[in-house]
Each structure stands twice: as structure tokens, then as C-alpha cells.
Length: 556
Image 1 (tube, rainbow, N blue to C red):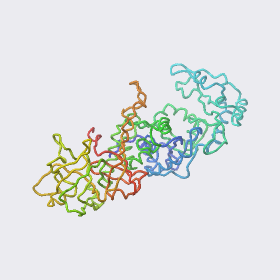
Image 2: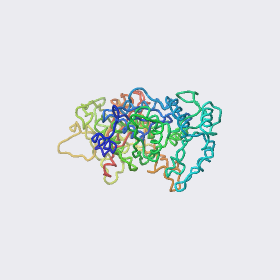
Image 3: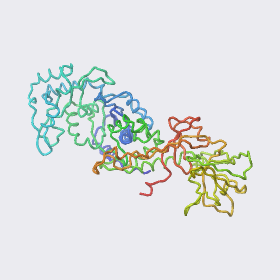
Image 4: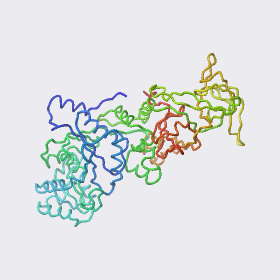
């Protein structure tokens, strides 16, 4: 799919053309997730922007874990982040960086600010700090602790570090401008007390830098030239620049540039709510295929190429918008249509008995692996007088326009023969259990000159069919804007009760059953599927990745 634009690359191209900005030895970006959850499709955009920009300009991208909030962070998330990055085909430069590795240097920077009278220890409570900050139309009020002496501030800050004070009793604030039109510049908190075990540095620290102080320093320490972040940080950029300027000099100086974050219909991308769904059993873990996490999309059957193509199609701009989920489905459908082998699977089976087929005969038919890619070759499909077909492919009393099997009608069995339905059997509740038919031996290969049939159906031979579990996944939410409560409904009321339908009596051909987990297939007429993590050849399990129907292409 065609790239719709990237203003960041345009900006860099112009800089390089004019020679007006020094990037040091080379362009260096960073991908700085907080290890407090699994990466989701929104992070994939940032990931592709950060790593993709470094790749394009022959630069480097650092992986840095922004672990400044130990109460929510865990090594489980660190491992998952690394796996997702490698799955997308990217790699970071050098060793993994941790924000916590820079805590000593950050502390020194804070001490220097105190010594220059540019930071002070404040005893106001969080609520009082909020009240003193003012509003968008009214300036803030100076904290009564703003005029503390340098000596007193140094002493209190050292005692904060030593663990003398309880959580929330004191903070360190930058002394900037309480009348600034930008509220972020009204003496922001840059350190807080937090007695919590840290996943990386243990119990070494009980004071932690705030993100707005730590992030620009991390970039500066690492020689980042382009700090690329989502648009909500635009109002924080003056503070970013203030920290770099007042804690420097640094060469090169990092430049923060903001781009629009990714929003998708029918999707929630708040880590807090995603964690809630995991912890409360709404979904079956972070890698549930209904989740927007990269591990969930991977388990559902999405490929790295489809994710990258989707991000390229969305483009990189400064305008927030919501992308239709069908575009993401279009990208995976387009990729798998070219790369996924074809196979036959019957998800809701009824038996088809060919009464005039020679008893005990088993034939082999040649079938293309992928008609879109002839280089993938062919496969053998076995055929016998007992088959499984889809329940929806037979109607005892057909409706108008129905061209599949019904008494007296003839259809083509894919790759094999023409068959004509003659009778059927039902259970006590009237459900069809078996259909009888006859076949025309002259139609071998599924084609007979001069005789046309309107319907073609797929099948699996009963003599070698492999029982399988097939999970039909749909959108987790039934509303395109699950977080919009303007209609008076909570997001939990918008959950789709049919987001997962399990077909536990399906049949697949052995060719599909004997695959490895995560293998992709197009099940003829049913959609694209991927072998689940739980898949084995003895108990095949497939997840529906996407249906065959392209809704986004029609919307274009």
C-alpha cells in the first residue's frame, strides 16, 4: 500500500539539504516505552516511526525502558517489549537502556538546579499544588516554600533521598514561572518520594524523577538527535527544552517533535483499561486475539508486514484522527492473500454421502497451494465417497437465489466432481445430519464441457479429516467508539458478546493439521486463519485472522 506521507522525514530532508542543523555523528532516535504493560497497535506506530526514521537515514535507534514509576513496572513487560520489537523486524543499537541507569546523573542535575536557585523542596500536598497552579486564564500562586534557601533545599533533598520522609509529604519542584501561560511551566514537580521496590535497581532509591524531567535528560545523555513522541506532549515541549538548556550543555541537543497518535475504531488502547480486562477475566490474557496488543494481533495471525503496511498507509502527521479498523484488516488480508497457503476446512459439518461412488476408493486431486503465487506449487487432496461439507451448503427448502446443494440440484465439489443431491436425513429436532447425492465420473477435476453449474462448495474427505477447534474472533466492542460515554453507556456495556465463537467440531485436511503454531492459511470460503499457540497436530487449533470480505476496499 502506498505511503501517505511523513512530515518528520520531510523535516529531516530539509534540514540535511540546508545544512542548518548538526546531528553529531549520525541521526539517533529512541523508542522509550514504560514497562508497565504490553505494547499495542498504537505503540507500533511510534515503534515504526522511531526505528524506521533511524533506518532511513543510516542512523541508530535506542531501546530505552522508561522505568521511573516502579509501582507499575515489571520484568515480564520488559521481556514482552523486546519480543515484540524483534517480531516487527527491528533491532536496537547496543545494549538496552534503562531510565533507572541514569538516576545518579539525574540526581546530580537536580542538585545543580537547587544550587543555582532553580529548584526547591515543596511541602504542599498534591491537592494544594494543583490549587496553587491556577487555571488557563488565571496565573498560579507561589508556593510558601518557594523562597527556601539553597542550603535548606539541599538538606531537605538529601533527606528525601535518605528515606526520612513518607510518600507524598515533599516534592522537588523546578522554579520557573508561576504566571506562565503554559501550565506545565508553573514550577512543575521534578522529583517525588516513593518507597517502592524497583524491578531494575531494587531498593536503592526512594525518590524518583518525574517523566517530564527524566525524559529530556535521558535523550540528552544518550545523544538523541530526534525525540519523536505523540502529540499530547506538544504542550510539554517548552519544559523539555528548559530541562535540556538548564542541565546542559549537551552536544548534540535533542529536538522534540510530536506526531499524531494512532486511534482505531472499535479499539481501546489505554493500558489501564487493557490491564483491567486482563485482571478481571474479560479477555484471556494480554495475548488474547481480541486484544489490540502486538502479542494479541500476532496470535490472531497478523504479520509484521501487515502492521508496517498499515502504519505506512495511515501516514505520519500532526493531526489527530480515528482510523477505520477495516483498513488494518485490509492490510492483513492483502498480505495473506499473496502469501498464505490455501486449505479446506469445514467449520459446521454435515455428512455428504456419494451413493454411486465405488466403495473403498480413495482418489488424489492436485490443488494449487496459492493461486496468487504459482511458485508455491501444488498439494495433494484425497477424495472418497464420504465427505464433510458445511451445514450452510445444503438447504432442504432453498430460498430464491440459493445455488448450493438442495434436492435435485447439482454443484461442483472444488477440485473433484459434479454431484447432485438426491435425499437427506434429519434428527428428531429436524436438523439435517446427512445428505445423499450421486456424482458424475465424467466431471473429474470439477469441470465438464458444455454443462454449467452455478455453485461450487468445499469439502474434507471423511476418511482422513482431522478434528479441529476453530475460534472465530470478532471485534471486542460492538461500538466504534468504546470510550465515548456521551450516550450514557460505560465502556463495559459496549463489549461484544459474540466476540468469540468456538467451533469445536470442525474438520480440516491433514495438510493444515500438520503445521506449526502461527502458520497461516486461507480456509477456502471461510477466511484467513492462523494456527494458535495451543495448536498441535493431534489437537489442531486455528484462530480466524480476518474474513474474506473486504469492507475497507469498498469504502474507498
